[in-house]
Image (cartoon, rainbow over all chains, first blue to last red; front, side, top):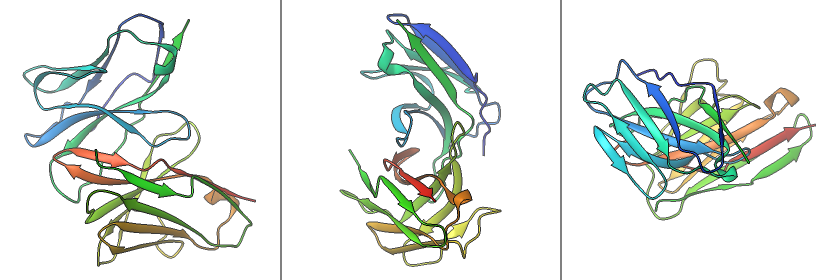
Length: 111
Length: 114
């Protein structure tokens, strides 16, 4: 399973764009890149998923270079409610395979 | 979207008792469910993989006799912490795969053993 590395913590202010980069050098051909958000005492919540290039949804964008060895989650204009832990995960596309979590990035947004 | 309902959301038990946590897939069938444990300020740690109609697969270091997993139907998986002790106090989370590289998680159970 591909190991992921991301910053332990990041600080930002309301209204700013936040980019969290994750490296996954050993990603395999069948792997997807998925980002989850977790608030204290809650289960992780899906943010966005991609395989290559750029993916955008209503809350975030995900940039994946051609070699797929890294990815960047972009949160366009953060608010205080975006303070959470963000996990970058590489999901092997096979039934019965669990997600393995790394340490995640704790994002703190201040006013 | 696919939802996994987890109950209870929190429970406090006396040391030595057993407690059961349930996870139900509400609008899809989950052949496999995954159980995680999370200690304060730490990441999720995979404990076991629950397979419908067969024995669960436990990760190294997880006591299968303490953490009993039952997956009797395609929509229900249970985790029973037997003879619980204070060190078993943690946040337990279940998850199910819902598509290619896509997973959904329960809301978690805060277990406190006193």
